[in-house]
Image (cartoon, rainbow, N blue to C red; front, side):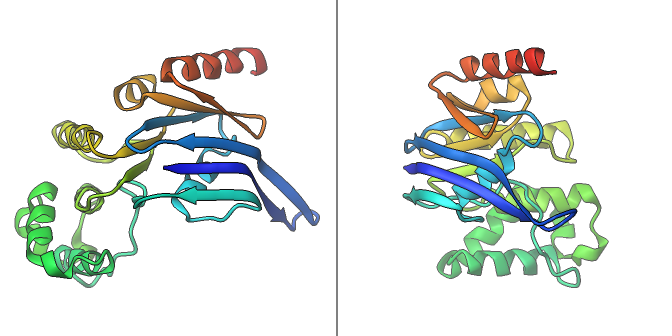
Amino acid sequence: MIIFNQVGKYYIQRHPEYQFKSVLEQVSLTIAAKQSVGIIGQSHSGRSTLLKLIAGIEYPSSGKIQRGGRISWPIGAAISFNQALSGRQNARFIIRLQGGDNQLTDYLTQIHQFSELASDFDRPLKSYTPNMRAKLQLALSMAFEMDFYIADELNFPVETKFKQKLHCEIKQRLETAGFILISQNETQLKTFCQAGIWLHRKQAYWFDEIEEAFKYYTESQTVYD
């Protein structure tokens, strides 16, 4: 479970003059275990900030956040790989960071198979194309069992067949874990999410149905554009 209690977030701007920039104000919400939630809002509405607060990447400026269980890093997010090392060697490092030493061989096999890199898994990262790198990042993201998976969009430079496999894997994980997705793609939101959070004017509005959240988001664009 993830609980926000009167959470606010601001940043300090030093140019052109020193001032506080408020992004989110008095956000209170609860995301239950195994719940899938879509985060919707216009650009600069605080979507990425909210996701970072959920993941613990950033801390609130005010209020309190409680987290129960393991929360993933954003699916497919760029990882600080060592370019001189192979995909296998980089994967081994990430597995150890995640405390998977006792199952190192199993994890490596799983990542190798999911990535579909074949012999390229043992080539240095500096020789990888964007497609190969994305496949390795996605395979690493899905290698570990989490209580909540998070994603900032699901658009990756991989072929359609690989995307379909990834989407099937995410759907399977939703049987035992929660999922929090930033997206403006209505089809993606309805495919993966039950509930919705609409961010508007620094506030977060909770909807039990993702369709209702998307409706308010769409109407707000018409009114305020």
